[in-house]
Length: 117
Image (tube, rainbow, N blue to C red):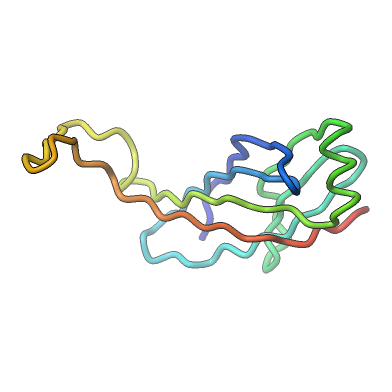
C-alpha cells in the first residue's frame, strides 16, 4: 500500500508534467493506481481503489490552460520504500570507474487522463 505521496515539481513542456515521489510500506507493495482530478486550480492525485486523497497542489494559470487544452497530465513517479531508501551512510567506491554506489530506485512514467470537477 501507498504510505505517502509527495508532489515535488509541476511544469509545462508539451503537456503538464508532474514529478511525484511515492513512498510504499513494503518492497512487495504494487498497489498504486492514481486518479487525477482538478477542482478550481487545485490539482489532486487520488487512489482509484479506495478514493483516498493522496496529494494536491495549486496550479498557475499557464498550467491550468495547458491542462484544459490537453485533458491529460504526464506523471513521473519515483517509487521509494521505507527502510530501503534513505541516506546512504557508507559510500563504497566502485574501483573500476571510481564512482560511488547508489541506492536502487524504481521510476515510472505515464500519461493519465484528468477529470475536471
